[in-house]
Length: 210
Figure 1 (cartoon, rainbow, N blue to C red):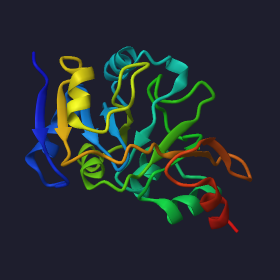
Figure 2: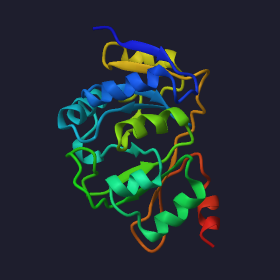
Figure 3: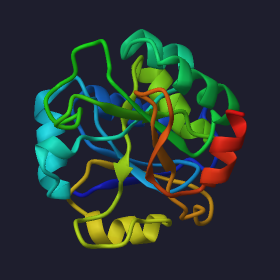
Figure 4: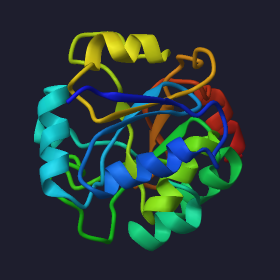
């Protein structure tokens, strides 16, 4: 079956976003825009969907799958309380391109957490992505929409060239996305640990904690 592609622009009330939520609920894979790159979304509570996504990305199970959520309330309801250090950062940078790594207090399907039991999550500054998570009632996966070894997609055309027939639905934004990946920070300890440089400068993260 051919991959469906629906233009949603930046309208979270678009019928395409509702369709995306329905595809996720049925165990499908949805490509959707965020404030940085296109993401590959599945329902992280469905093992078959998570396994399919890991095969598509050629991603080792222990690598984990990053998540996006509608808001902090959803993060804490579905994953558990964010550590105090993480809460200070999310209050400063969410919604936005800062991903926090912490240990969830809720069970997650194998493949979502990293081998050390941690999970990576953020609330993006993208109404469409947040609405998808809101409609699903839980965070959704947000690994970049590209095949292993290929560049992350910033346009729907790039998504189609790599993932045609491999995903169930592509939600198309208006124009290219920023292309800057989120900054990833581990907040499990007393001090933040930079895991990946990204859209939020590390200096800004440190300054926000002074």
